[in-house]
Structure formats: C-alpha cells, structure tokens
Image (cartoon, rainbow, N blue to C red):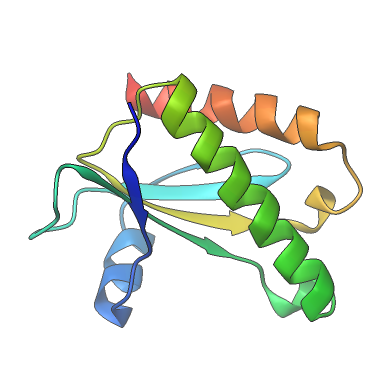
Length: 114
C-alpha cells in the first residue's frame, strides 16, 4: 500500500509525541503515538538529526536515508497509520551500511505495529 508521507508541522505535535511511547535502538529513537485530527490515510512522520551528529551535509544525508527507508517501508510492510512518528537519528547512522540500518528499522516498525 502506497501512502502519502506528511511531516509533522506544529510545535505542539512534536511536544505531544515526545511524551508518548518510545522505542530505541543503536541507530534511532522512535517516538510514536496517536495525535488528534490526523488523516488516517497518510503517514505522519518527521525525521530529526541533531547538530551533534555533524555538519549540514551529514545531517541531510541521514535524513535522506531515513526518508528512503520509510518509502520502502510503506511499499513492503503495512505501517500503523493511526500513529504519528518522530524519528531522531543517532550518530552511529553515519558510519554504517544502509542495508543494516534498513533491516533494523523494519524490525522496529514491525514491533510497533503489534
């Protein structure tokens, strides 16, 4: 199922997600929860790379990788569209292979789905 991906836009959405459930691994921390007035047909997700990770080039590389992984996840697995997601990247993402990161994130999103 191909769904349109929307980013979180309001500060209140970020703050409310940070108070909800979280799951973490060595590459990312994923905050997820139900936010009111959300369209159930669209995937509501945002990616954050903090300045500690590196310069703008490195941060944008990480966000590009995460967007690509989520596009594949929308096609291959059925994500829970009731939830909104906030994905915060960790510095270990820079030095690892894309394939390993993708497999790990797929496992995390399958845990959330259950």
